[in-house]
Length: 343
Image 1: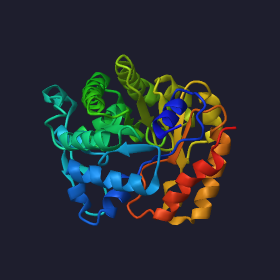
Image 2: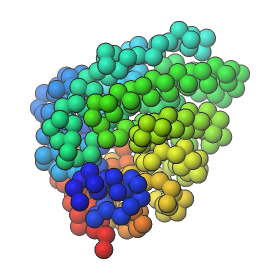
Image 3: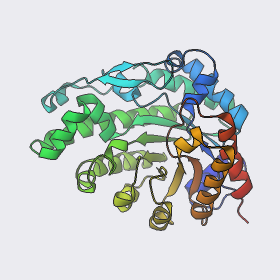
């Protein structure tokens, strides 16, 4: 199989020739160009060059393309800080009250910055290597995460905790879902094979399973359904221990669930068997500070648990840090070839 066939088989729960590999490596890839990371993350040509260079070095099956966790927020008017040694970060919310939600407008991804630059990078990658590697164009943050950036984390969490304006919270989440969905469509139209969202704020490390079900889950499911209606594959990423919400997480219908090392992968595999494909779960701290041998052992263990029956893509559990050693990235990629062959 080639990389596209391999990833497609895993996502659709068919058995590939071996476990495919994803690299969530936009930060080390940008740093490897040798210039300003802030410049790379604001320039589609440079971002595409960085991801192409990394793919040529590591030969992974899936490119997860993004510029961080503040793309959608900036397109909506949030003030964002660009840094030379890490991904950009949301800084100042665009609204201070739920009463202001109705004045927000859904941005046009083809003209709104920096969405338009990520779309440019997607087009370049699709043109250059879209027949050789699976391109997942991340539609940045999902409904709950984007909502927290639009109004501020503390304000949103207080509104959810008190429940005094639940209708307003739902309106904000609905707006955020529309932003991410429109961006996802644009990324797919630009040549991506799949798209994804990040929803760490929705996870049990931040909010209760009850609040996840009450607020985040319905919006995630609606986004999945809207994209599925157009034949589009959506990945959903939630950091931390997702076991307390694993059945609800699966019930969103996302074809790929991205999990990190805090999730009990045995329990996740059992719950999701025959229902969804998991991506992850290698600890990014291990990827940064461990040895290649330690990375290989972690990958071997993950493959042994997650690979049987297919529905598994090996990769980091979250974004790799800027200074992740290249030897450890090679170890991750090579582990899939060494231990992930289906017989």
